[in-house]
Length: 284
DNA sequence: ATGTCGAAATCGTTTCGA
Image (cartoon, rainbow, N blue to C red; front, side, top):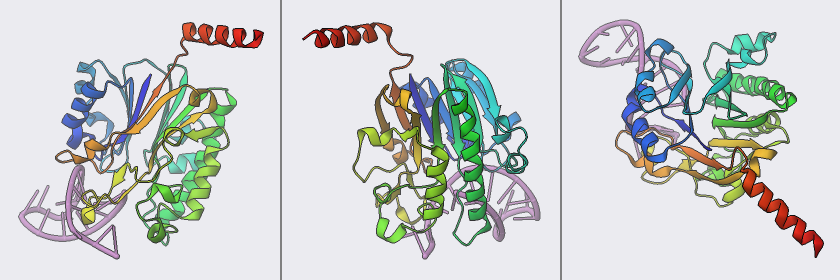
C-alpha cells in the first residue's frame, strides 16, 4: 500500500500537476492539505476519471484537507468533532477545516493541516498551541479503539535541528519553538513514530521551501511534512521518501509530497516463510 | 527575515495568510 501526503497550496491551481503526479507515482491514497476551495467547487470529477474516489473537508480561500483514494473509505470523520462530539473546544476549532480521518484498508488515516502560527507573539500562535492540545485528545480515541494508525500531513513544525536548513538561526522561532514542539510530541504520544527517520537520519532533507527569498534556489528548506505510523505499521514500512523534484516544477506548490510504501495488508505467504525460517532456526 | 505565491474583495490593485 502506497500512501502520500502533499500540501498543494490550492488544488485548483495545482490540478494538472497533481493528476500527472498521480499517474506517475500511482499511490493508493493521496492526502492533500491547503486545498483552498469550498466543497461544492472541489474538482472531484478529474480524480474520478483516473479511478480515484475523493473526500474533502474544505472552505473558501484557506485551509482545506482531502483524500484521493483508489481503496474504499469507511467511517469518514470531518474535523475534530468527528472524534470528540461533546468537546466545546472541538466545535470552536472546527471553523478552520484542517482535519479529515477515515478507515482505509483497516488503517485509521488522519490527515492534518496544523496551523502555521505566524509568529510567537501572534494570537495565531496561541491558536496553534490550543489546536495541538485538542489534537492530543483527538488522537487518543482511535488508539483506544485499537486501530492501526497513520497520522500525516503538514505539521508546520520542525521537531529537531536536523529538520531545518539553519537550526542556529531558526530554533526557538515559529515552527521550531519549544512549546509547539512539546505540544506536538505530546499529541503524538509513545506509539506514533516519524517513518521518514527510520530510513534517513541525515539533515538536508526538506519538504517545504518558502516561495520568498529564493529559498528553493538556495536549498533553504524545512522538513515539516511528516508521516507518523503506529508500531504495528512501522514494522511494515518498506521505504519513505520526499519527492523533492516536484518543487522544481513550473508553478510549484511550496511543499513537496512525502510518500511511504507499506507491506500492508500483511503478505500471508511471506509471513509463513518467515515463521518457517524462525522455526528452523529455533531447532538449531 | 521576507526578495513570492494564491485567493478574494476593496475589483485591475490591495489585502491577507503562509
